[in-house]
Length: 320
Image (tube, rainbow, N blue to C red; front, side, top):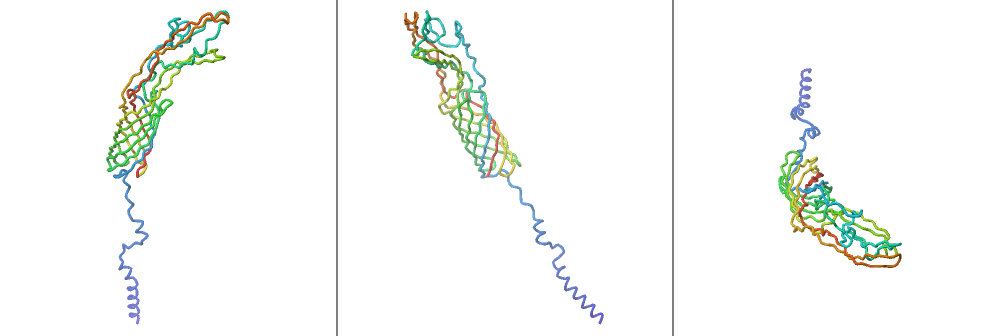
């Protein structure tokens, strides 16, 4: 009886434990399988058929820097400002002056209007009207492969009291490795705006009852704006670093050639003004002698010379 009982217990235990051994010792729960799954692969930082948007700031410096040395402003009898020469009285004073005798009179308003005369170019650069400036821009590129892409670029530069802006069609070749991609770029487009710095002689008057009662002579250096479109060529090289799969940092340097506009130098022409030299005795007019005052004035030219510049850019890129 005891042997029958032991045999029955052994068979019962075998039937209970056998299914567990049938599955094998390597069985794990579905939860454990999820934990052991491999991590997803790292994204490809630079891809074919990729669209890139770049937003950047820029520092530009002129190829032609510095200023021209202008002739000193000299005259006679303490008149060192007015560039006009009146041969009749042998001075550099453009104004037809009144001789003061026994009370005298003031020169007439009609004979002595306000003056502004361009007397010479100051800045050697003819785009920024200074040596360097800041600006910025944006570009959009499409890479049909990991290595080559085309795009459009717009840039703006803060020329002196004016704006110089342009646009280009660009070609870019890059060589990605890891997160980095050195690249070279080139483009063709147009640019407009900018200025050249000139010096002006100014004379302002205060009038009362049709006569000049006071005057002020002074010089200013003011920009003369460009009003024509020129061609723009660009070559450069740079480096991009991808912070994430879709956001990167970029920095590059490019040299920009301005061309395509026929060059016309500044022209000098003789500026004349008819005046009258009045002589009074007390309040009585004694004589009125016509005088001819002359001066050389600059008429600014235009063209594409002295407008090339270097451009350093740094900004963000967004890729999709």
